[in-house]
Amino acid sequence: MLTSLAAAIFVPNTIDFSSDAPAPADAAERLKAELATYRAHAAQVRGNMVALLDREQDRIIGKAQLELDSDVREMPLKPSIVVTNLEPMIANMEASALPGVDRNVHTINRPSFPEAGRTPREWAAQTSMGLRGQAMDDLLAYDEHVRAVEEEYEKEISKGSEALGTASEDADATEASTPLMSFIHTIANGPS
Image 1: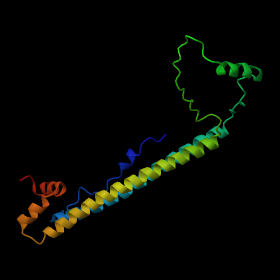
Image 2 (image 1 turned 60 degrees about the vertical axis):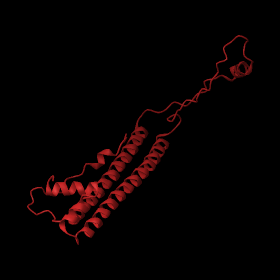
Image 3 (image 1 turned 90 degrees about the vertical axis):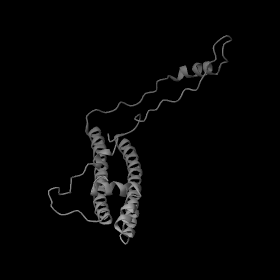
Image 4 (image 1 turned 135 degrees about the vertical axis):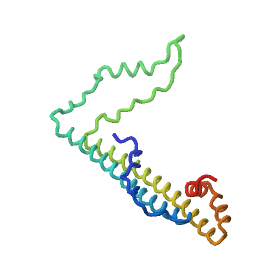
């Protein structure tokens, strides 16, 4: 049973660490390169999420098919109460409580029998619909997260582009004005 899509973040590495290509010189170009890498990674993660959900769907269908193909058949349900015992039982439940008896009566929740009386086809349909509903929520939440991260990158790129027209010390001050730019500046130039 699929309980988490966390494994979807692990995608093949596409960065060539042995490349001698120089890193982009200014912060805006570095951010653009990072944004392109992030978008490629996000697309791969989303593809992995869909693949995990498809695999879970195949598992559900396979389990239902296995139950249908098995030789074990369910026994027909038999009533557990004989009709002749029904009247005295209801009369006992309707009777008033005995004096001196503890009346600590509380609500008893009905037990959940999600598997009772369902065919494998009904189980597969219900489980698949639940899976698809959860998948839609997860994919929409992931898309929202990706959009938020991309917007942050784009804001930083626009700030970095505006700073290119000023002196280098002004650009350094602008780069250090946000945590992301400060981090990138530290990585690129070393700690000051």
